[in-house]
Length: 615
Image 1 (cartoon, rainbow, N blue to C red):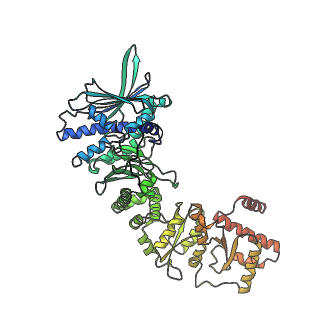
Image 2 (spheres, rainbow, N blue to C red):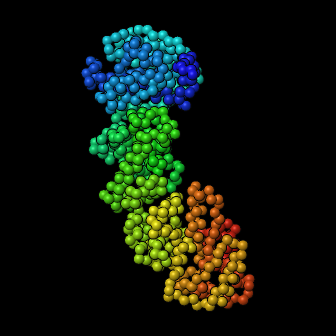
Image 3 (cartoon, one colour):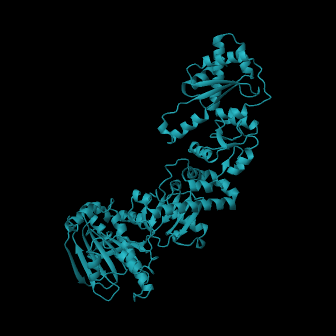
């Protein structure tokens, strides 16, 4: 057996850093500004505990571009480094000064907001620079240091003259990265990654004019104290709305309400989530929540951290327990992330319940704008479902709203099937299903309006959770068990006449996917009614929304219900001419199709033409 220590060849480190340290080279600026922030916050902490005998003042971070000399400079007024500290923290790749600092001051520095963990952030500079210089002066009374490296393992480290405390990183930008000398590009990156850093950031341009150097420095470009870092009691509704506009300057809609997240045990997390007005498109809404770590932007793909149904919201989540560099597989396996996701679910559910209890009328007015989130949450998150049953609303065709328990109580006397199961009638489109709604209303049935794109999945879930309840669309064949069943209605046709009538209709519809059924109903009921098998229609809808493809394609199937007590049924029986009888049946079937929105294309054209010819 042979044992030993793996040897990492330093010559190979820099090519790897340049190509593979981060998937996107633009990250270098985020890393350098984060380091500058750490240096500033370290000084603040040491000054607060008396270990740094300096005036902290109001330090800031400056970013300067020098296009003439192809330089990008990042300056801070933080803790700085001695020659020995440069040797320790810079020359040892992946030695994290932030990690060591937090360990040394673990009792007093846990809430300082220091960002770094891995010690590789500084070397991201070599992804865009041929040479990097560090000019730094510690807060201690020691000489300043000047470190230079050209991207090889060779470096120089000397003492130098520097009066002000802090560090200056000078990047000599390589020819293939000159975009990072353009003002608009730097502004873009600072706005994306450093918009809410806890230390003020200035950005400027260095130019040569008549032999003199002029540095143009803009105003502070970031907000060091964003709303999510404050206590909810210190914020007004206007503060929340203003912060929403700051997050989404190109959005002109107003959020409906917000949820302020603030927890420090068993993990640290702060943030603000906004409920915007939502459309029915589940995909367009996603990727609007921004994830931060100690006010440093990480990503707007929060899948795995935020429950999936809440990714349609907008806002910010900030947690130091989530590293800056994460993979989806890491997030899915991380215990802290799962706890964070569960906490957010619970917090959102509690807030929605509170809004419902405090002002139900206002909650009802907002329901159509937020229902897609709540319905999606009920479908995909078991814990949210349990809480949501207390505030989820079911709108009716009469423009009223019922909770689940209120709905059960209202239909228990009048809407049960032969087995005593509650039958919830609903419409997915009040206009196209109007005739069926009218027929149901005549029986004093309660009819819900369920028109979201996931309704087929949702009612399947609710039926599983409520075994004594079934959901039936008003144009479904299952409604016949309610509408047509009337003990007082007796057929005016004999069994033989009914059989002749059915045969005539079936012959006319031969080749179509319609099953003909007959039933004696009130004479005022429509003579021909088209219904769909509830199960098949629902499975097809689920398939179309991505839920049942594994079962193959579901065909369109319909039932044609013929009212044998209608005048039309009697008239069909009295016609001897086969062609005339067939024409009358076809006209009646087309009218039934028209009421369902099923008469389309060539059939609709022929129907219109035929009716014009009969005028």
